[in-house]
Image 1 (cartoon, rainbow, N blue to C red):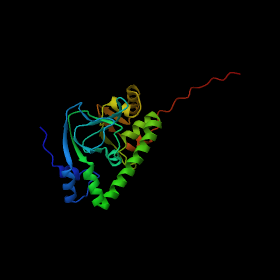
Image 2: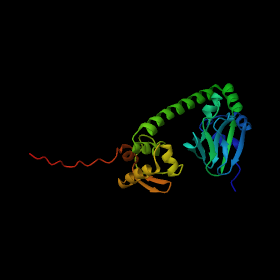
Image 3: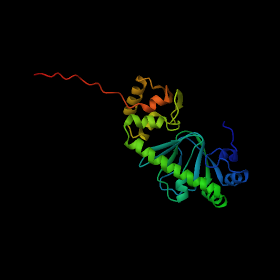
Image 4: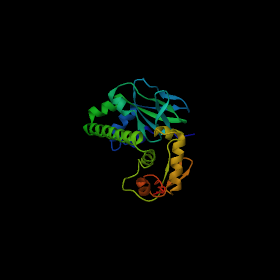
Length: 235
């Protein structure tokens, strides 16, 4: 049985609310609601009107569109749905529990009230939206247009500093088939790329856990060089 959470403490750890005073957190918590979802249960459907934004306490939420095409998987400690809430437009995605979940919904009225009350928080909201737009553009360029191996490498290193080097371990937030869909690849193609990276000594794969031998080497990998066959020239 999972322990009950205190809403103020949970909200205080979300990036958007980090550093807010106790009074602000109490007001936001008063406009928040805990939602427990069994695996496979819907959180909202494409076309629904937003009532707020969501943050995952535990479990995973699967975001899909266009009859099930995977867009993202949201894990514990992450939030989603803020931009649509600000615009007050219908969801263009559906959200479903990938496993048993506890999700917190913060009402749009509570967030909008804090924006009007706190100019510093309002500026943070603007910065957060700008960061999300930049990330979406970068992901579109990488995941939709880039070479297949670079799509995967960029995804694996998405939360790693560009200056980082050396070994590190990561856990994929989704199964490989879902990741393949996220990167616009077939599951077979993703497996081939992981196999190639493993042969090159760049990663070790153990289920959803990956050990990266050296982040800098992986970042600089551009695929196997194709061998050039000798051409026999006759007079």
